Length: 351
Image 1 (cartoon, rainbow, N blue to C red):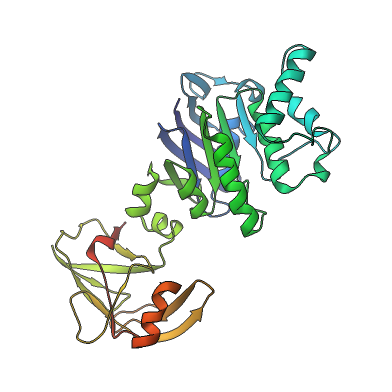
Image 2: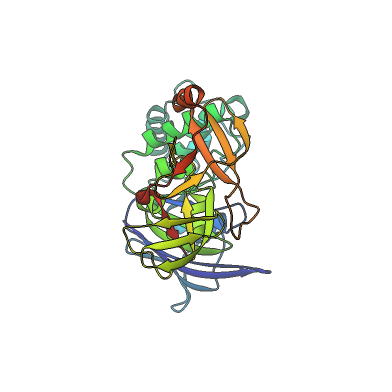
C-alpha cells in the first residue's frame, strides 16, 4: 500500500518536521523520548492536525493543507494500538472487540467470534480487561482493531511498560498475529531491538525532525548520521581530521587510522560499535588502539571494558569495548590484549 508523509506542526516551542515515503508494509520509527514519534502517529491517525503538508496512505489522501483536505479520524480506516491498549474497562472482551464493527447483530456476532478464535481468546469472551494478563489485553486490543480490517495499524510503544520476558514473548506473538496482514503497520519505539526485529523500513527521528529514512538493516550497517548511529546502538564516536584521502586522525581517541576506501570529505565523525573490536596481543598492527583500561563492568552475558584514549586532543569520553561471554575465556587465559584493532568494514563515517 505504501505511505507518503510530509508534515509540519508547531506545538509551543516544539516543532515537528517529518518527511518520508514508505513502500514496505512494516515501518519502524526510532527515536529518544520526546522527539515527536507519537506526535507523528497522532497526525497520521487524525488525532492531531499538522499546520502544513500532506499524509497519503496508498491512493487515499488523509490530509493535504493546500487542498484543505482533512479526513476525520473515524473515516481514515486506521487502527491505533496505544501503550495501555485503551480497552474499555466496563466492557467484556467480546464487547470490546465488537465496538467498531458495523452490520447487523448477527454479522457482528459472527465477526467477533472469528476474532476471538483467531487471537486465541476462547474462554475469555466474558472477562473484563482487569481480569486479563498483559498478553491477553494486547490480543484483545489487536482483535478489536483487526475486526474492522483497517488499511493501516499504528503501534505506539506497545511493549514499553513490560518486563523483559513478557516483552519478548509479546513481540513474537504480535509478529505472528500480523504476518498475514497486508496493510501498513507503523511501530514507534525507542528500543532499537524492537525496531530491528519488526521493521523493513526505518525512520530515525531527533528533536522533531527526520534524521534518515531507508531500509532498516542498511541504516543499522551504515547510519550516515551521528544521531542515527547512536540510536542504533553505537557507543564510540570521535571527531575526525582528514589528513589525506586515506588517512584520518581520530581526535577523541588519540590515534591515526589508515583506510583503503577514501575518507568522505563531508564526514565530521567516525563511529565504531563496541562489539566490533578485534583483540591483538603482542606487536602493534595497523589501525590499533592501545588498551589503557580505566574500568570494567562484568554483566551476566558480557563483559564491558572502558578504555582511556592514548594521546592527543582527547575528550572526556571513554572508549567502550563489549565482549560477549563466550569470548571471555580467551581473555581469562591470555590476559587483556595489548591493542584493539579496528576493522575497516565496520568503521562508520558520519555527518
